[in-house]
Image (tube, rainbow, N blue to C red; front, side, top):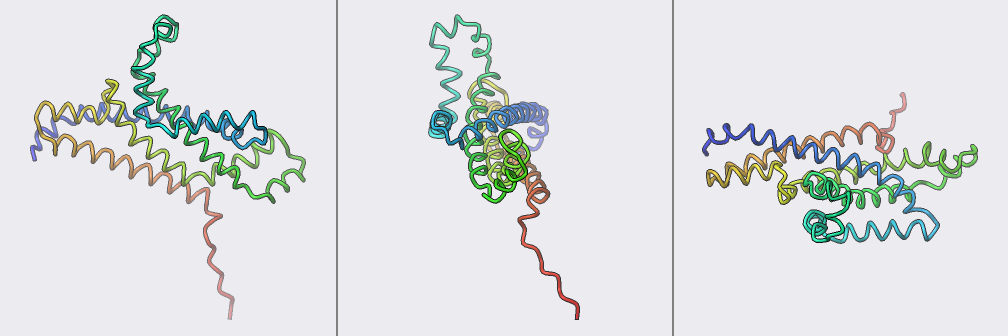
Length: 235
């Protein structure tokens, strides 16, 4: 192991880590905000409301994220109408294209996760809420959504970790993330173990941290689902 090269390269890895985290955070935030209304539409009994959302999630979940990224970054540039439009200032930017691809992909998965959690709401909860006069927006904001978001935590944590791993493909559109730094270090020194080993350690720490964070959230918001220990009766 060439430890000196590893140490000298740490500032570059720090810059790549910053890129990865920024891309992950903004993609998660935007996909979360988009997924909530889409999940509500997905469980709607109205055909014309739920089916377009189903089609959107079906297409996005049925195609690889890398293909979606290439279509947005490379594919749209082939159309003259796009290059001459006001949106070209955005689509020629690698940051915007990566954010858009990750956001749309994560929105599709998160929508289905939240929709499944909404469908799992106990009928008794809904009937009790309606008995108190709750309906429409109040029913969703006070009863359905809070409960669904709590139940969705385990599945949503998998989506967050998966998206973090997927940010490694951002380097294919010129963003200097962790993986791109590892490739550059390997190209400069031809040290595969050192260059990609450091990247692997960074990704492992990120994964471990995210999993730990969600475990704490699950312990806090899903503690009512844990089996209760019986209190021994006094003798």
